[in-house]
Image (cartoon, rainbow, N blue to C red; front, side, top):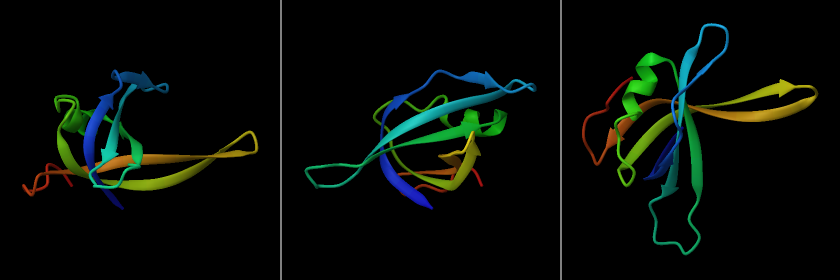
Length: 96
């Protein structure tokens, strides 16, 4: 899946799990002329993935490719959007 948008916010890099894996999230707002724009938060997990987004400034327009996953926890289900590739303004992909 992919989403094209402008970075409106980024979270601080944190470390998760026993292995202290780095994680960072990026919030994008849809690039459209519609009055009501969609937003999405995409997680980047692991050294290589976090390195793709940690230096991108707020306001950057890009296309992010991501995987959609659902996890069950205590009988409830949660969606996770995990990024794996970035394309900026028609340029070659940043990572695969």
